[in-house]
Length: 362
Ligand SMILES: [Zn+2]
Image (cartoon, rainbow, N blue to C red; front, top):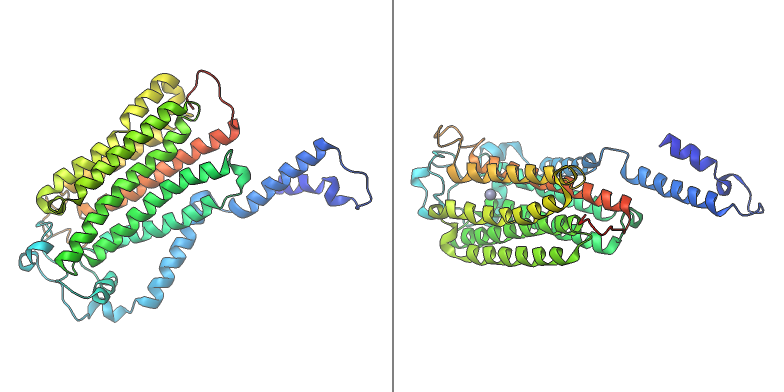
């Protein structure tokens, strides 16, 4: 930053009067570049990049909690948590969580009030509520970056916008679903179906920027892969519309459908690695981040399907550390890891400009 300021001070336009002769084109372009970088540093680089999103996110959540959270409500609501065995069938999801369930509460006000009380869904709600605000702020910060940081600003912002839309909708519907899950059978089923649909949207949205940048110089396979992932995503959405899909008996099938959708990305990844070579794919191509993302999603889905750790400690994970919470945290981490990898691909494209060589996909 200091170096940029001292560069700017040496620019003729900042030191000389308006009657001075015009600066040479080379000096002007250096000054313009310095000014652009200075503006960018001031706006976006005062903190490490993720911190810009963490700060407003925690300030917002802290403010909401300060105004809404009345400590006595946490312990002295009008309802008491109940054990698993007295729950109605439509609320019975995980029989390893023995106590701490909300009773059926056919009032949205009561459901939203329960966000600030301790029960089996508290961790599930907050993990995705915080993730939702985090991605909302991250999307605003990223999409409002100056256009000079992109090769094709409109196109690239649309591509990132699709990804952010998938992530934000997924996290939003997820915390809403966990909040109103105890309202009634109809509301629970409606939100559960919507939850499945937006998870498919998140997976589809994740592929869009990755395919866009990885196959930047080869639009034909890029288009084919995009069409294939959209068709598979729509199929997953249709399957998740089926009412029985949301029942506990189909937990394994749910995990398998979404894992299959995610792992359909293996084909373009192998294609990319074969053409570009392992070293380039792992370094410039950021495939390592893609593998880490897949590992986080699959670990989360496996723990969710097998209900680990509560399976080994029935009744001990009723409030914290149940598989569903771990799955939620891993989904947010995987979405962020993916964003990190794709934003590095975007930075690479920015340094290359719009140029391509004949033998490269990237
Ligand atoms: Zn969930």
